[in-house]
Amino acid sequence: MSIVISPDFCVRPALCETLDVEIAISDIILLNKIIQQGIDFLSISLCEDIMYHIEKKGFYPTDKIFKKQIKESGLDDSFAIKDLVTALLNILDRTNDICEDNNITGVINNDEDIKFTPELNTANGSAIDYCYRDTIKNLAAIKNINKKSHSIINSNLPNTINIEIKNPTIFINNIEIKKQLINEDIEVNSCIRQKILKLDISKLYSHVKNKDNLHLVLFFRTLQAINEIGGDIQSIDLDSFVIGEHFFNSLYDCQCNPDAKFSDVFLETVSKLLAGNPKNEESPFRVGKEKTAKQKTKGDLLAYRTHITKSKEGLRLMYWKCKSGGIELANVGNKQDLEIK
Figure (cartoon, rainbow, N blue to C red):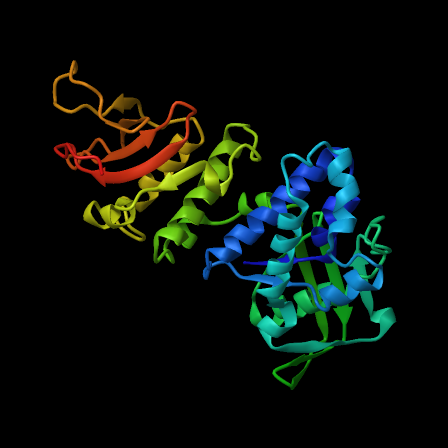
């Protein structure tokens, strides 16, 4: 599943209601962090000619378009406008148009042979009154021909848009493909986090190759865990927890690595812990086996562990926790392992 970034997403902090400014900003910053980590198992693309549509209405991403809203929202001490603009420009610079990513030239049809449900007028009242019709046509063609689904990130469109095109001609890799009918539903999500809630984390985990990939997958699964208990999905960010130097390699020693025997229960255990709803009891990690032994420390951090499995392997998740609740994932070990790294 690919995430498609719309012009509305890019300028939302300047146009949304004051109460929504913080969410709009955090969405851009989060997406930039995801892209910076070099994610290669979640495709991110742009609506066609996105900068043209932004510039056409005078919304080129500069400090001026965000300054007023951020100040009126009382967020000028929390967010630097320069950092926001830098994040946005990085997103635009490091991603391709959806057509470029899928080798599609476009879709040709008669205007009377296309139907949108619900009908699209001016992006449902969006202050940017350009038309999404071409983008949605292209997404429908890609889904129909290549069997690839894409979700638009846009807070001004309905959750699902059905498009029906009679007798379209599709151009992919300069090959002309004629169809009698295209009838597809295009998914729309209001923000990045909403899309993350729908991701198949087990499938994503199977593509994890390094520590940064793991960090993203654990963050995604934690958002889902928070949502499952009715919590605030805005309460956690990628910086809310840390992965220790030895954590990734320890997964392979205990069959918790991608596609291994305990991969799913590992994801569940870690995500629930980070969501503040541990699956199993948390226990202090002590310097010895005695219950009265002193708890291990690392600076201001206290050592803990919790069960991943209670079978013969008796796998434990070891981690450090600071007084504010922040967690550093240290390593996974068996029940005999008395080392936290």
